[in-house]
Length: 99
Image (tube, rainbow, N blue to C red; front, top):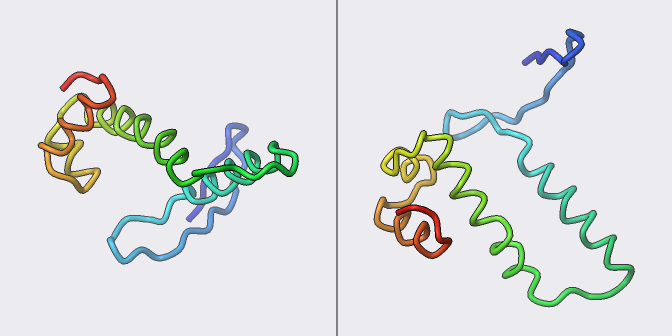
């Protein structure tokens, strides 16, 4: 696959084959970089409950962004997220987003 940068130059984009029929996007790379940067910023201090913290930090923007991507259509957002519409509505209420 080829991608075009803002200046118009062609750059290579490597994507792994996907078993779901959708291309593997670089989301994992962004997450790894953000986590590495966060851990490096701790200057040797050990974080506590990192798993819970990451879920809290990522879950709300995930739901907000997907709902926006689906133009507010909760049924479409639920399909994109792979959850039921009821679970989506519960999470939206939990985050104080419109449900």
